[in-house]
Image 1: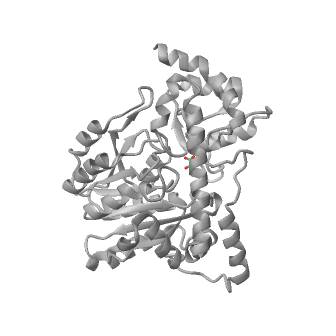
Image 2 (image 1 turned 45 degrees about the vertical axis):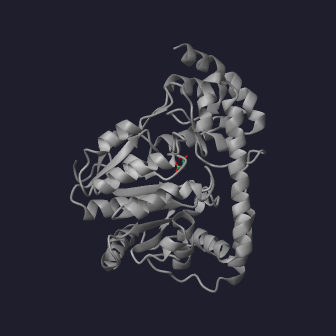
Image 3 (image 1 turned 180 degrees about the vertical axis):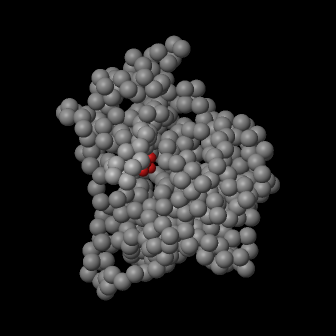
Length: 400
Ligand code: LMR
């Protein structure tokens, strides 16, 4: 390159994130009746994603009472961090002196911070991730310089969980390696471990001294707020140390407000404050201080018994609606019956990549490249169309 040649000219083509590319492709499609079953957002039966009533009420309070917009600091809104912690961890763990936490820009910010912590403070600098997983997991850890080790998890075409394969792989892991786990409503596979399965995972993680990193982005949308926290709490109790990356995108419907948190359990009370500083430093270098609005709204909800009740009711209503849609989706075709055993916002269809592309091309139906369908984006009106579009492909799968 000479001193006068334009900059950034030697770039090679990079693969775009699959879900973001899908959003763009959907927007660019001008066919009326196109169906967005890609990115994970909840929609009501009219196809819109409303702001939850508890959130609207809290926003009004915030506007009326917020005295200033001065910086809160690198930890963000500490009242939010403390009150929210009780939802995934339960009240008694929040009082544990080994627990520290901070607000992050969304669940992605929390995961990135967890990855930075692993990169800077563990010798193996390696994270175990099951396949398939959310397409952003691997890039987040890679970007922080953490090596990826894949373990078996789920085969979409045969719709089978390979827990034995997962445990066998983890039996080869070394102390200090991280283990990324979906706390509930696995994205994309919709799998939730049973308490017995969680026991096996906690056992291997504790014995081999791994650092579990729980990604909890759908609490309350699977089996309910308490049940969805089972694995998180078990890992907290069993493992020497663990990290919890939390997102309020879906369960508070705050998507674009980027409202998340990262909690860590230090091995003992004495090392908790050092761990806290080790978390603050990469946060300061990345975003300095997190955005306030969403966290303030969640804090206001959780400070009020009435708003908390309203939020829980609304969340439960959403959960039941998604369950009903899942049931109707599973009833569309015998090959979809297995979707009944999945939970959360997503269903992994037993279809090949060609089918995903044909749905997009021939029917304007957008699902993720790996066959993940956003059940929470379906409406009853769309169901027959989806069934008709899928039928020939599912027949093939059954015959095969
Ligand atoms: C999804 O998987 O669709 C959501 O988590 C949104 C995202 O950022 O990918």
